[in-house]
View 1 (cartoon, rainbow, N blue to C red):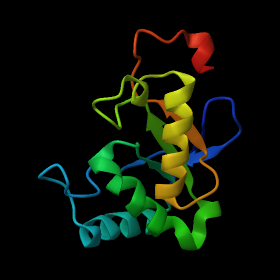
View 2: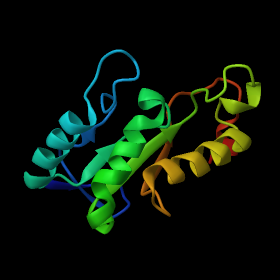
View 3: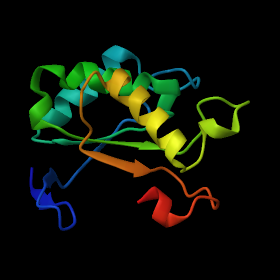
Length: 136
């Protein structure tokens, strides 16, 4: 596996990231825990260290699986997760790029990932409401 610098951060990530949107079957498709673990193990054995997930992937199961799979070697993996998309359909403050949703989503992601830090936290989609300055 080759590694590349992530922007100007100095962080080295595998040139292939493992996207985990299909870790979990809550959407009627995707991989079981066992199938997800097999994909993860093959990726890690090939030298991959950069994992992409999001708070909404398979209703949070993706983050739960990732947290479980990286637990024994957390420091090795670069974990990126995203926020923006709703976590409560009936509450307007549980979606979007504003600080309240960011903080709520971050806390929930940390719990699901079973870690005390996330290496890369990013906006999943622009909400066309929150100013860029507020997000930054």
